[in-house]
Image (cartoon, rainbow, N blue to C red; front, side, top):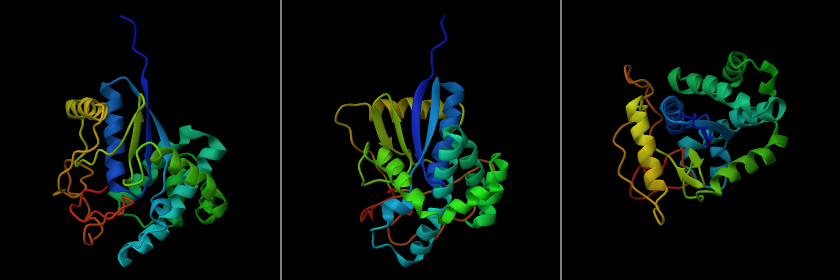
Length: 234
């Protein structure tokens, strides 16, 4: 039997979003059990939320959000898109598992782990990268609309936000979720399934997750909108 060529799957992420982090690790699990080839793209929560009236406690978080995505864009421009996954993995592990500060030292450590020059951390304050950052963000968001956030997934002409899931599905669970998401998202006229989130991000099935940032009203830092009826907006 001829080997099936992998299907490209485009995934847009902001390394600060815990839900995108979980979804990205799920997609890597899917890659083990389904013929898919993930392609990684940068999107920016800071861009999506810059014109929003944010809760005060999240303004600092969004200010910190510019640095890592600028670095990711700079790395992609200089070394190609293949460096995005190892850099994302190094950043995400530090931000979400280790709860490291979102500062230059953390970014430099992630760059070194990814085999990239540590001086790429200079890009954290380089606003000349913002046009490319906005373009990459728009490439993902234009496929799904601007009422959502990260992650965005696009496969075979079908694009969607999410999934929002915790903990990371693995093995057969990863495959089952992938098959179901594709079936639902690919249905003509389908737009939304939703229920209230009752679980915080869990990054390791065998260990408790570090405490997430405090939740204020119904706003989520991973989304671009305030949902007045449910917390599931990212």
